[in-house]
Image (cartoon, rainbow, N blue to C red; front, side):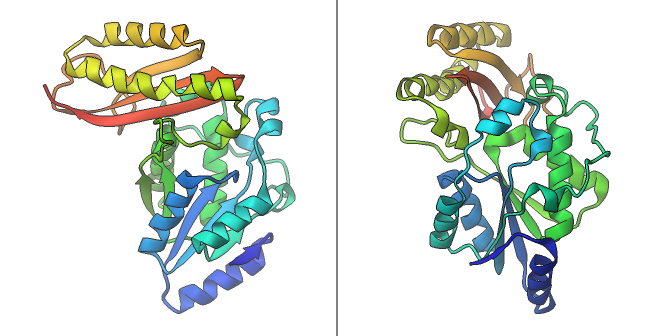
Amino acid sequence: MEIYRDIAPLQQHLNEHKFQGKKIGLVPTMGALHEGHLSLIQASQADNDITVCSIYVNPTQFNNSQDLEKYPRNLDQDISLLREAGCHVLFCPDDSTIYTEQPKISFNFAGLDQVMEGKFRPGHFSGVGLIVSKLFNIVAPHCAYFGQKDLQQYLIIKQLVRDLSYNVQLKCIPIVREADGMAMSSRNKRLTEEGRGKAVILYRTLSEAQKMLKSRMDVPRVKKEVTAIIDQAGVELEYFEIVNPETLEFMENNLSGKNVALCVAGYVDGVRLIDNEIFNLEF
């Protein structure tokens, strides 16, 4: 695996492959890699000749300085995992490489960035749009891979690609879960043993909510039941929403035959966790 910290040598290396007609796949990450990230690597390897993984903890997408400071970092372990997975190229720049000066540009996604994550993390998706734009410009991949766990982020990036005419194909890869159903996340490493036991309620509640909707329980009651279950488990619920998985529009009635996304966010041990389930609701 080739490792680059600077842009020019990375681009020179990738241009040599592109000149030979090879396809480039990009997997953007913030490190602290787990099986979920590796599933993105595997998906890229199946579609492309060269897989590039980027590791960069992007400060412009953090609206909480403590969250940025505490975000898990273990580059040596990440490098080992990527080598074992057969990744071809790692791009791991520092802040001065990515942001040569304080950025002045910002993004507005016309409401898509104002609900759920955007409501509770102001400025987050502007930072996401900025770093993803930079990575697309630097790597110029044919395909880019993102996880379904960050569903809203994926939809934001789809909008970014459409509006800025990036010549890149996006792939959304299903959530990888632990044996008990909990979604794999870099933030899970910050949980205490007790907190880890509590955190699985987020997934279990999504499963229960799906059953409730399939039993024709109305949306307001489902949301009330979910709130009660999560509160009883000692988890601080931030939001639980039932939305259209393509537009994030809130869904209230006439759900039969439609694709539905259940999205949840909450705090355990002061660690913010998110999860979602997407399914077709047939009565």
